[in-house]
Length: 491
Ligand code: UDX
Ligand code: UDX
Ligand code: ADP
Image 1: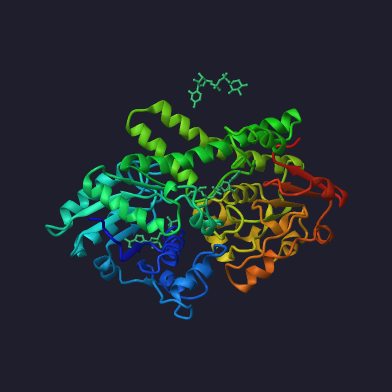
Image 2: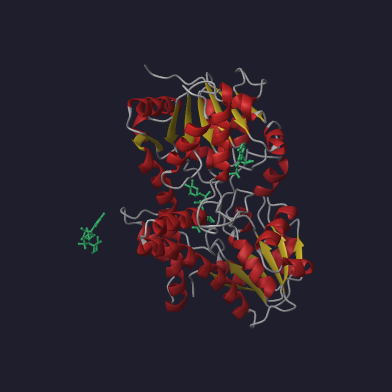
């Protein structure tokens, strides 16, 4: 008979677990959803209106399901009591981090599964009843076998665990619309009666707001691989366009026009074809390297090389951008000042994982530049920490770096503005800036304001350059103000 889910426990209160659980709870008032994490600070933040992650629209969804103030009974909870919540749940979402391994075999390439393993050991230890366990985090192929093996060795006899793969496809900055209106929900299961029954139970949870024809049930291992493959193909499109952008700069073509023309082919489609200083974020690089590592471990060396080349082009694009800055500034950055606008890996997020800004800032610091960074959402401590943990030079270049509270402050005495994140406020084009209902007042006020480029020009050194790593400015208008403008993929 069908299983009806009453209690869900989500392990991991991060970018995936938090928003996903909030949407599931808000759409299923009869299901109690508890998000657990051993990070107490994070859990406490989820209980306030100052959420630990920034995501437009998230706070409204969280509040509706979490707060007794709303008309309905609260059904979204955040807790550090991992054991109790696991014990009570019928269905457990695994949303822990799976970063790239930093030690031992596969370091720098393979996925680190230790967080997942430890969460599953915990489940084995404390479970007193049958559980459906759902892989939400991106995992290597056949991770489900590993989890099953750990459970078989740690669980009490007579308890049945069914493992599902249900990868999350949300993109940061648009998590809430992506979750509310997904292209598809993938549910992978074993094709056994129990596997299919568990898949149906999870499909029913999504069925509360997603059309049935968008909920796809497939083989467990196809589902695991489809997640890695989707990210690899998306990143591949960006690397393809970025490779073309290098050609455009030499042949006098314009990459925006080329992308537009290509995207009109329905077989290709127009999205994810925007040239940039390089993709960032916690997923693309990590997932491609994981895919390549898997291929290599299967002795498919040509396949591994193919996937890795996507990451290599991305590294090349970041370096190429820096080289252009150096070239335009008369081959020396020594004693020059650069205003860096934007540090997050894309707009509408405060996330800086793998952001192209890390490489670019590191490179220009190495060239001896003074760097003044402004990002509307990312805090100074985070910028410094990110640079310190990733770059070679920050130890000795600390003095060269200033983090500013405004775009104008960053421009003071600067020779160039370098745009690294496509925040609306940096563009001098006249499209409407979206009003933001997702976060604190500070951000709300900021996202409505656009930079006055004429004012920025007043405080800069001559000649003034703009290096637009996101192609968001109208170069002609800036040239009228006296700027020399360099865009990606434009001669
Ligand atoms: C292609 C382009 O589609 C067309 O726009 C351009 O003008 C000329 O080149 P064509 O070579 O005639 O057209 O056929 P196409 O349908 O694109 O197939 C090319 C090859 O790819 C064929 O061998 C086909 O079997 C193969 N193919 C196509 C696949 O292996 N998988 C696919 O999903 C699609
Ligand atoms: C990605 C996938 O889109 C999502 O489906 C998956 O679940 C997680 O990984 P995310 O990394 O949050 O999401 O953002 P995405 O919008 O895909 O952008 C990734 C990076 O590519 C960003 O640095 C972005 O600026 C860059 N990008 C994106 C481009 O350079 N050009 C584009 O056309 C699109
Ligand atoms: P993602 O982007 O995949 O959501 P995050 O790093 O934002 O990744 O979030 C993962 C969360 O999972 C972190 O807050 C981390 O503390 C938590 N976590 C990792 N392992 C465990 C565990 N065994 N039990 C509880 N929480 C865990």
